Image (cartoon, rainbow, N blue to C red; front, side, top):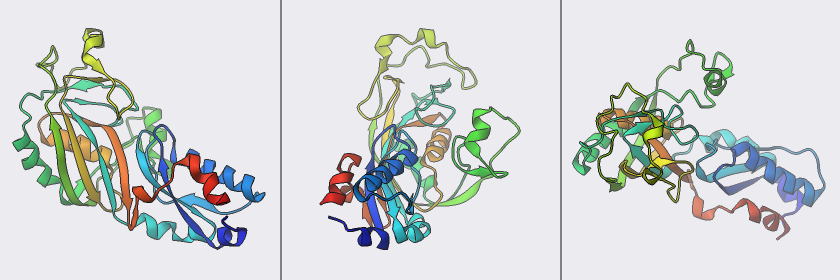
Length: 271
């Protein structure tokens, strides 16, 4: 059993955050377990790097004096794996919102993907998503986004992408009625037949099954938004793109295969 003295001295708990949990909810789950096991009400706890609700993977929960290390842990390099859908976009760049536009995609080839990905390695300019925790004038950007405030913009910044690897490319189904849809038009969703909608194993929500999918592995530094990278990658391909799955596999020296599911946290403390 982890003693109270060990807890107060500081622990870093690698958690495998499940899909549809916020990072805040995951931390609260750990907090509730600690209160129940040790009978204490006040202690320091936090996490080193937010994961979006639909993202899974490594979340470092810091307890006790380990909360002093949060800043240095956040500075560590990260690794992500995931899937981008090509030929469409969503307002938040992932599946938390429905597709809003369709784009041409028949020109997408493995060769074009390889040529384009190199443009996203090194120091790149990136605008964080409006649906993010980035602060604008003292408020979180998502607060402005939820109010649909068109007057607020986020300034671009330079972020480090150490490597961007395409691990698989699935070209999708046959061309459909959206093949010639203008990139400035929102399609009539009533024309999307049930047969063309598919729930993939990883993402939550509906993705038209004819659209190409790209699996990737990215190693990057602090401040890099993979959702924004997906958006920009789609534009660079002469199309559109959004994330349908994202998993953080590494932060600094911590890897997701060292992480525990939330269901095992109580057993960890009880030994």
